[in-house]
Image 1: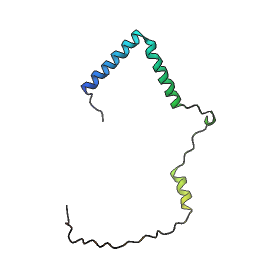
Image 2: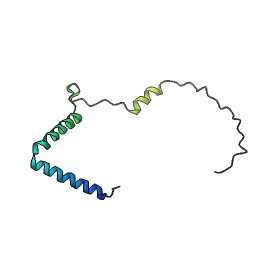
Image 3: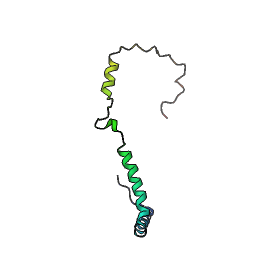
Image 4: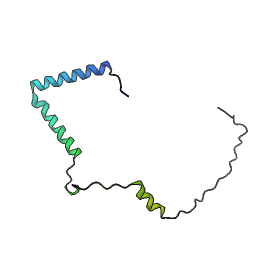
Length: 96
């Protein structure tokens, strides 16, 4: 489902784009340094420097492997039993 663009969002987006273009025209270093830092952090987040796990896919437990271990054990019946309640159901209405 696609949302409609709010006029306020359009104005804000246009002002952001104008500000970025103006900053890039006047002092590009001021804009490129934060972009480089953000890109480095993003790459480190996406591809963490873990040399020992390189080339090995991560091992994940599946639901079928955990079920096969549990199915070999025998289960005791639960010690629960139903106790009849003492509430009178005659005073309750049949519908709300």
